[in-house]
Image (cartoon, rainbow, N blue to C red; front, side, top):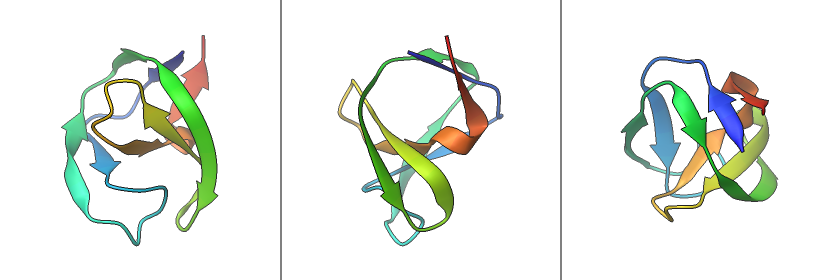
Length: 62
């Protein structure tokens, strides 16, 4: 689980800024089910809801 601190953090279709955005999430606690490397961030996390991936540079482990 991670706590997102950024306002309106983009959700992407894949792990990287080269993937299209699919919306955004607000600050809060979210469950990450997979991690990957990709363009534009140190690490990307796949949201449990299956909606997409977020940059873990804007999240902290809880």
